[in-house]
Length: 266
Image (tube, rainbow, N blue to C red; front, side, top):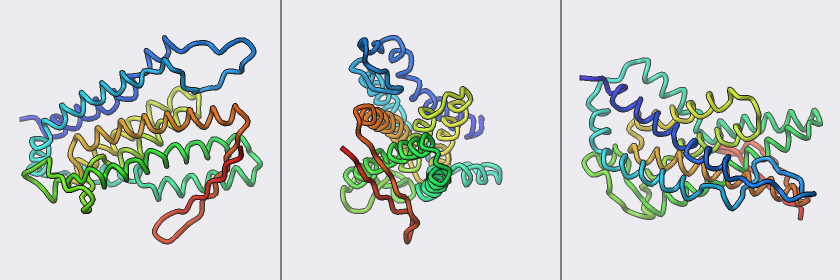
């Protein structure tokens, strides 16, 4: 019998890594050139962006994962975990922790501010907002849907109790991790970044299934939400900046996490 890493980890990673790529070929083929005299804005959304295609792919993958939720979770529960897999889950779980990412962004923003590196400062703001927006959307969906976690409902993958504290769908850690990977990918031209960022985000999703904190379909939904939400938010901010608007972000430590203050210039 194949190990659960072969039966679950590899297919899950393949699914998560496929989601960000679902839109890329069509986007590249259909993106129109800006009119003469109008400056091009990197990452600017166009009416031809394949949001519908991405939604169809994500919905199909989600439906397939949902049909296997009980089987996968039961297999994870019954298979002894190795020390290596537990350590890996602990490490990659941090990549979807808003406090960890918030501290990293705050440090980067502060260093850029002190060094008068306006480009890095602006990029840090875009990354921060691109993570925050899908993150907040995820919190709203969690409370609204009210899906119980595997540990709370081991025999019923679709026990729903909206607005009563159950918050399994979507996976927040996966949403944040994929939003961070997408935002980072958009802020650099380095070819190695997507080959590191998206697999790391996928491993964050795997860690949530490994730890029995989420169903597999929760992770798929979080990956799609994080990728799409970060892309749409980044497009909007770049469009606003190109139109003459501006945005500043102030991050500061707060009890239990980080506080953020946004200032928008119109």
